[in-house]
Amino acid sequence: MEKKRNWLLYALITMVTWGIWGAFSDYPDYPATLTYVVWAISMIPCALVALANIRFKLDTRRKSVFLGMGVGLLGAAGQLILFEALKYGPAYIIFPMISVAPIVTVILSTLVLKERVSKLGVLGIILAFVAIICFSLSGKSDEAVKGNLWILLASLVFIFWGVQAFVMKLANNYAPDAESVFAYMAIAAVALIPVALLMTDFSQPINRSFNGPYLTFFVQILNAIGALTLVYANRYGKAMIVAPLGDACAPVITIIISLVLYSHVPSPTQIVGMVAAIACVLIFSRE
Image 1 (tube, one colour):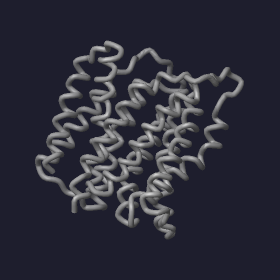
Image 2 (cartoon, rainbow, N blue to C red):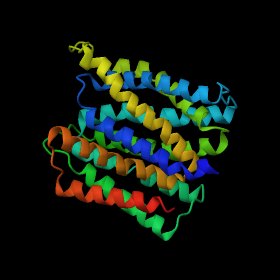
Image 3 (spheres, rainbow, N blue to C red):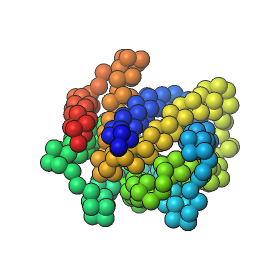
Image 4 (tube, helix red, strand yellow):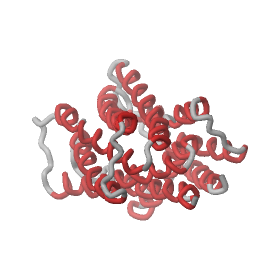
């Protein structure tokens, strides 16, 4: 089927939208927990577009609801736990640690779903992880460490996000359409908004001008669009390929935009990551 051959196109759309999102995600002056709230709200219009595509015939079978909500809760809860982890631990260690979460997806997809790829595909997966590691090793090392709680929290994020991609594939295998899976992801994200609000320190000044919540929405809707096309990519492609591909290639777009707009010259490590990411895309295009 034509759609099955388009999994890479959906993955590339995720790569582009997440890459642009990454380039501008630090620009809005808005608290991280409230950014989560705005992101959850930005999922709603994307979910409505997805549901309109299936004439609002949402799959309401118990297993579909369970799997779809599971995908959303694993991703959203992981994001909220990450906020807490960053309060206690250094980002230069936490982000490299959670960035390789797709290895969990690859292992589960191999053992449970029995997914297989060619020898060339294995090389592509390895290159994807090389790119992920190279991009994640660019953080600064001058952040304070407060105890060991961050290790537990970061480990939970690592597990949650690795399992999320696997459950997304399970949900796509069971549900009759990808749109229902995304709709439940959006519902789960919105359901955790009260938790994000409880985590917010409202005693601190909050920017309510355009470059606060409004600019945050325009940036975060790119994240939501990328999440939607990622669901499609997982539906028609193999989870063990799709999961590392998105994480490996989005930073390439971010770095290119940063180079053009901010004259940020990539480090040698980032250049190696870019080459590895582009190579893995070329390899996966032949899978």
